[in-house]
Length: 396
Image (cartoon, rainbow, N blue to C red; front, side, top):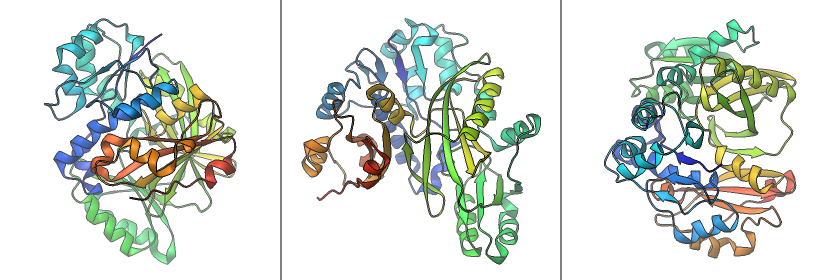
């Protein structure tokens, strides 16, 4: 069954939350629209997709040769602040959506724009109520689930942004490392690992500009833990299907820099995430759901709920379709205007992902790299050692 993908990325309060990343508001909006390009990795040639711009022709041909991507691309006029609003104002996109059944359309996230698209297209019940989406993406809701479901959790302290420094300075006394995050799931922009008063002060300065998040949660950082992301597709009636799992790579400061896929998921983490997926589906959640789980040996602790597609969703889609055993994602610096042709000239065509060998490099997010300065690269291979050893280097 072919699908239409509508990858409108607009996280709640995003324009404020991502000020911590140093982008201007107008630039930030353009970046989120441009990130829609990565959905080509999830598409098959018979699918349709809404993008903010046409992809580079050579990149699209490369994807099509792999059985990925599609030429059925709808590009609505970019006149609104996000891609979902552009879709609402585009007769071509809305006519296509109106011709579909609910199961034939897939949204990145279900918020106000998606509800309006579904109503206008005559597809009632096709999306999660936006109020539920917002609730599911908060730490408050996760804490309530932990209590209701009797889940073992790492003790947290909470503080308003106005009292943040006093609480966190007390927690970091004596050299205790602290893990802190904002109340809302925001793509990692509100996650911090703190070692001392200087880190606390730096965090406080960053979040002071985020007027929409006034509550933060902090816990002792457990050395040696692994962070895993488990992804599911929910049907809104208690049912769910497992999509995939990957181990998250975090650098100092808690910044999410990539994922490793193909390793056997920790059983305790999978069981915990399945419980959470079932509960959210029973509560009315539809579409993609990701559970971030901290693993301390055999113990699994819930860390964050993401009622949306996750960073590794497109790469997991490639793994499911082509079948490489392992993958790792990395970010590499590139200049403005960098092209797929330039990437091939730099690394050599023989290093590109091959459907025959099921190994090689797959670059993506060319459109957003013009503004962020970073290109995403997925490294696929037959063994974990193979993907871990590969480190793409580019010369300009």
